[in-house]
Each structure stands twice: as C-alpha cells, then as structure tokens.
Image (cartoon, rainbow, N blue to C red; front, top):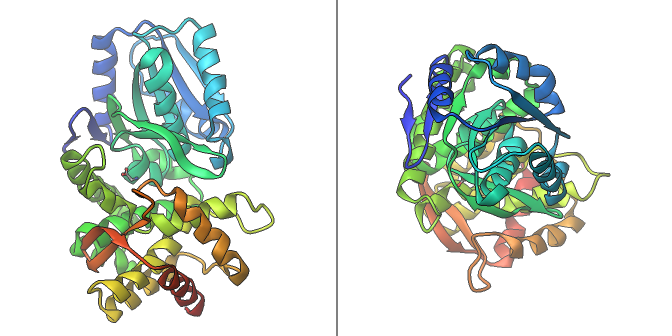
Length: 356
Ligand code: GLY
C-alpha cells in the first residue's frame, strides 16, 4: 500500500513500516531512543516491534498504566522526569507504541520535553490507526474534560501494522469502527455504504478499509491542519459524544464507555439534530441509527443525567464567544460545521436516542 503523505509526516502500512523505520533510525542518528508502552502493549506488542528493528539500539522502555483515566498531566510528569533522569536531550526520539491514550499523551510529552523532541506513532488499536495517531493532535485530559491540554504537531511518521490488532478485544475494535463510520458520514457516502453493509464486511478487507479511512482523514487534515475550518468535520458525533464520555468517566457506578462507544451515541444524536436543522432525510437518519445500533449496545442514559451532560458542552473545544457549535450532516457524505443548536433540540436528541 502506498504511503500516505501529509504536511510533516508520512503514514506507512504493513511491512513497509519497518523498512521506513529502519532506514529513518539509521539516518537520524538519535542520541537516545525510548519507547512508550502501557502494560497491555508491553505484554502484547513490544516483542513484535523489537523483532523488526534491524540494528542494535539501546532502547529505553517507559511503561504507563493503561486507560483514559491515566491520560493526565501526572502521567506526563512521570515520563518527563524519567526522560530527564535518563539524560534524554533534544536529539532524542520517542516511539509511542499503543492506542490513542499512548499516542496522544506520548506525542504531547515529546512535543513539550525540552521544547520538543521527535516522535513516532505506532498505533496498536483500530481507533489509533484510523484516527488518534494521524494528524498530529496530541494532549491529555483535564479532570474529566477530554483533551483540554495539548498541542498540534505531527509525528515523524505513523506506522500502521494490523498485526498488532491480533490481541485487541472486540469492544476496542468496535470503538475504532465508530471513527471509520464517521469518516464515511462526513465525507464519503460510498465508504459509508461499504462499511454499513455489515453482512458483506470481511476481515480480509480490514487493511484496505483502514487505508481508506486514513486517506479521508489525511485529506482533511492536509487542507486544515490547525482546525480553522474543515478539520472541524472530524468532530461529528464528538460534541455530544465527548460530553457523554466525560460524564461516564466521572461516574464509575455507571457502565464504562470506550471513546468510540460514546461517539457512536453522539453520532446518532447529532444525526437526529441534522435531520431537524439541515437537510438530512429521516430515512438517512434511520439508516445511521440502525447501522450504529447493529454494532454498538444501546446505553440507557438516565433522564435525570441529561442536564448534567449538557452542562459539559460548554467545555467543547469548538466553542467560540460562548456559542456551542456542532458539526451536522447535510446528507450522508457531506458535513457542515459551526451549527448552532438550541437546548430544547439537544434535549430532544436525547429523547430520540432513548426511543430507539
Ligand atoms: N480526531 C479528530 C482530529 O484529529 O481532528
């Protein structure tokens, strides 16, 4: 598969990943190299990665706890201290081997340590392959607020090797699938149709489907790397989805929601808003809800939590001058950003989801 080139980075696929990596490591002559893993990728992915490195390098392994609750500044502090104690300088390299938490947080640590060292992303989850590791968004959560602190700066390269998915649990695969569906919904009706016909989907096609998703995302990011305009499309489903995810993160008595599971709910609700405010047809709205609910379990959101979730919308990063902006759909494959939605309609979107 042809590498996908962005402004400052390149996404490589399959075995070509390691040809590119080995040649980069040889040329770059880094003073030190570390690899950031969590305990899952330490156990399941690190030995595969190490077996692909041709030359002898002294690679320091830094391990963090897995999961979104550790995506915070305290974890960063631990890594900054470790890098400092290990004598990492500005010619050092950090390799992030993991899911979205590792690539977002590791990228942020790399971009800020000594004002920035090079980093490489090696996503090991579907979500990180099609979304988190591509496009240079790095950062951490602030309390329960998602990705509040961060910086946009692309990695040297992204290496997408689907062999890492072999040990990934099904719910994590579905979580990534939500972002792939989003790419179809905002930009490519044919891709949406291909993904939505679940009976036709074959695991053999996974590499191609991931590739197509990265092409869609990269095209958008290439045109608008700093999210001044069309990169906002990538937030479809995320305005309500992030608020729901944040709310569930701080309510351990409620079911744990993975990022993609929250975004799946957000896409159904924002599909509803699209049909009320823009030209998305009720048929397409039903199609979106049906396809998503065929993959994701319906979550029973307590009516008394609606307002608390809505209160979290004021923290959305797309907001400007006190306005809460949504990305909605004119039709499947065509999105619109900066849509203003009344509280009453947002409440109705909760009721729509509840009614399914
Ligand atoms: N995950 C959305 C973006 O990269 O813009």
